[in-house]
Image (cartoon, rainbow, N blue to C red; front, side, top):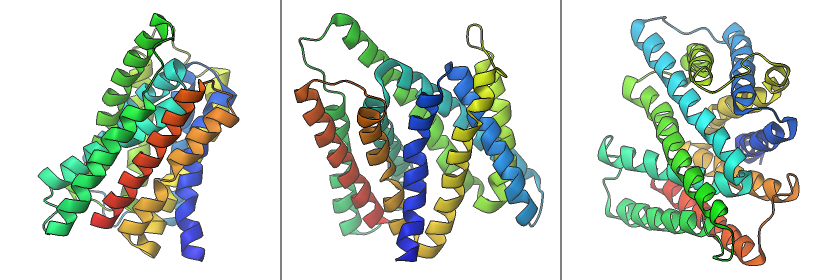
Length: 288
């Protein structure tokens, strides 16, 4: 029971992260910088307890790149929150990330070798695509401006997911230990955040809201570390599956806590899409 509860910590922290971020407020640049600063602070604490076995070029470059791609994915995801809301963005973001990481795993790492893995995996991909489509549903009666925002938000989410997928697969490609990467990865996140925030109009990189949003970075960092603990305690299949429950927390939280509005039909489609994305995530966990 204790291991299951541990596995739910990443889901809770990642699920609460966008809700806390939107409650604190600020520009996308404030929220991005706050996250990176909070993650960097937490990584210093991890470094005190876990020193990498060897500081080599492979570890440093791969971790820095990993952090930079995360910052690219994260700032675009944050932008989507401002455009289409957390309750609509998170299922789409989770679904597209699952699709991306699964396809890389199958095509590059050759993870599926047995017939049952292909059956479960292909079924999962179909469910996820359907879930994303359901979540993106809007009633035709809505204004044209809303449709434009949805298309813009979807495009930004797909771009952000590309960054998150690279963040997830680079450590595997470089064959680096997750614990060893925590600190140099956070350095990359901080550098990347400054870089991408500087491209925005009138960025407030170190404004008051940036420092308030350090809290969101701590939520992310706790999830990032506990997912590694969960994978060690529960195995990757169960640990991965439990972590995907974050989309339930963030989607329902967006509706209840942030009071994001939807028509009755849109709400049904969103909840249906959420269930499909979750089912797909569970099936993918079963292939691991």
